Length: 293
Image (cartoon, rainbow, N blue to C red; front, side):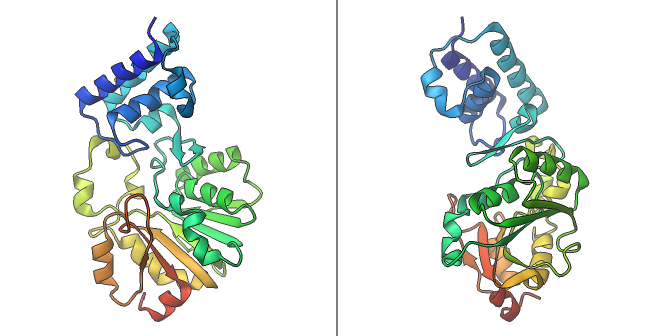
């Protein structure tokens, strides 16, 4: 009988030889193989170490090898093959209607934003470009007394988000809306707006590895310099922020381009596991006084 540790090593070797690209929940062959084996064998990830000597059934081993072969042959992100993705401790359903959840903003909720809400938590939150609904769900869990709106221009993406909202038991205080950014939100104001919008530059889109080409281009492509959606958010956000409201946006590797485009805006770059390059914070007053238009 093949044990869990042996299947893990075998799968890792298959992935290494195939020279796969990662970034959809894992960053290397070893971690991706662990995720696949745990999913196929019904093992919680935090129980893997204690399960290494356990024997796999023939059905489990066959499932592991079949999934590994599909991952190599199709170059699809493993999240699509498993129909699951994780953001922190939270599991989400995903398929090819949405990009695989990944955002440094999730790391900041709630502790990284605590200085902004020292007196009281945000009563109202907006997630722009919600996709699978992942950031909206994480925000709702982080601030359990807040009302959350989540918008996306893609109806197929919102269908996935609706499933995740339901599975997380948040239908009573998380509203999904189809909207091109703020278009359907006339008169609405929020204490906190978060967004992980499309921000991949045109040059980077042309060079994407196969894994990323399985994701909806609409959710990735940010125009020539990656800032098309960010510019629109900056131009319109002040009208939808409460007087002490805060805007938090993830922009990938585009910090230098953004600061060149908006030299008068006092961006606060928030510390994440990748440093202070990817997520900025602005207050409403910054946007009205700092030349966002």
